[in-house]
Image (cartoon, rainbow, N blue to C red):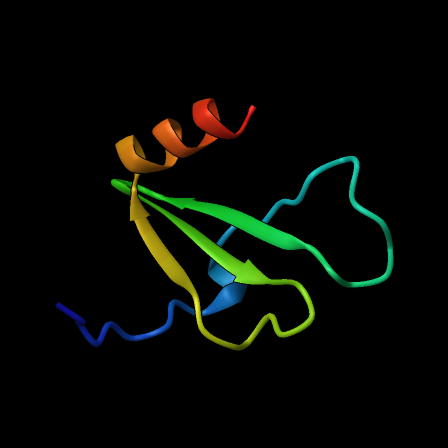
Length: 65
């Protein structure tokens, strides 16, 4: 099922990216908006954002490590 949620204005969020990322602009950025985690492409900061429940994000991180 797909839901249409408005994009959250980027200036209201504290976006961060990995300290291991390069300066080429090819990174994923993450912001917390309880109870969710938002993800966006650093090349297009005003573009679409993916929203995940915090629990799902933590499961993804623990699996990816």
